[in-house]
Length: 130
Picture 1: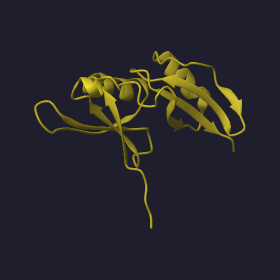
Picture 2 (picture 1 turned 120 degrees about the vertical axis):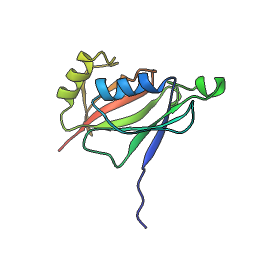
Picture 3 (picture 1 turned 90 degrees about the vertical axis):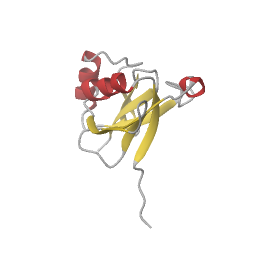
Picture 4 (picture 1 turned 30 degrees about the vertical axis):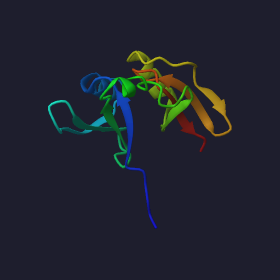
């Protein structure tokens, strides 16, 4: 059996502001933006060079869903983004206005730094040890 994760849905308040953050600030690729109805779109973005698993930007449809925007990890790091150069990405993201909770730190697994996306979800940027 062969399986892989294809999409991870992340709740957003607005499609266009989420696209702007992920594409313009994080450098992700916009894979798809297809209207499904007057209020719903199928929007997928992925890190550069890795379209196998993408984020589905899912607009919260009601107040119940809206309360979870930015809180999908329950306060824990929710998503882990691996990079081949953490210092480069850390500096580029900070210059783009992305808030980091810490400077890159050395760990057994490599170097990591926690940041928040536009809604407050916690991510960890990781450069694995070679």
